Length: 46
Image (cartoon, rainbow, N blue to C red):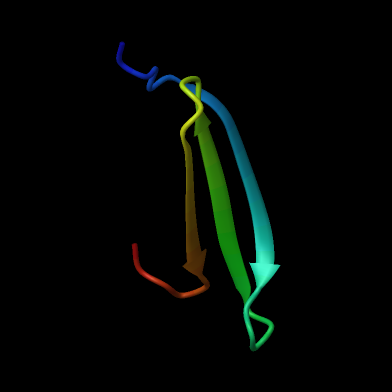
Protein backbone atom coordinates (compact mmCIF):
# COMPACT_ATOMS: atom_id res chain seq x y z
CA UNK A 1 0.00 0.00 0.00
CA UNK A 2 1.34 3.47 -0.90
CA UNK A 3 2.02 5.97 1.88
CA UNK A 4 -0.25 9.01 2.03
CA UNK A 5 1.34 12.18 0.67
CA UNK A 6 -1.28 14.49 2.19
CA UNK A 7 0.27 17.13 4.47
CA UNK A 8 -0.77 16.56 8.08
CA UNK A 9 1.28 19.23 9.85
CA UNK A 10 3.69 22.09 9.17
CA UNK A 11 5.88 23.65 11.87
CA UNK A 12 8.21 26.59 11.26
CA UNK A 13 10.71 28.25 13.55
CA UNK A 14 13.36 30.93 13.43
CA UNK A 15 16.77 29.92 14.75
CA UNK A 16 19.94 32.04 14.86
CA UNK A 17 23.02 30.89 12.96
CA UNK A 18 26.53 31.07 14.42
CA UNK A 19 26.67 34.83 13.74
CA UNK A 20 23.22 35.53 15.17
CA UNK A 21 21.54 35.93 11.78
CA UNK A 22 18.05 34.46 11.47
CA UNK A 23 17.57 31.08 9.80
CA UNK A 24 14.15 29.63 9.02
CA UNK A 25 13.67 25.91 9.61
CA UNK A 26 10.49 24.07 8.60
CA UNK A 27 9.24 20.56 9.38
CA UNK A 28 6.55 19.03 7.16
CA UNK A 29 4.88 15.80 8.29
CA UNK A 30 2.75 13.74 5.92
CA UNK A 31 -0.29 11.66 6.90
CA UNK A 32 1.76 8.56 6.06
CA UNK A 33 4.23 9.50 8.83
CA UNK A 34 7.10 10.78 6.67
CA UNK A 35 8.89 13.86 8.05
CA UNK A 36 10.83 16.35 5.94
CA UNK A 37 12.95 19.22 7.25
CA UNK A 38 14.50 22.19 5.43
CA UNK A 39 16.41 25.26 6.57
CA UNK A 40 17.34 28.45 4.76
CA UNK A 41 19.68 31.10 6.16
CA UNK A 42 18.99 34.80 5.83
CA UNK A 43 20.10 35.97 2.40
CA UNK A 44 20.24 32.37 1.18
CA UNK A 45 18.91 31.13 -2.12
CA UNK A 46 16.64 28.14 -2.48
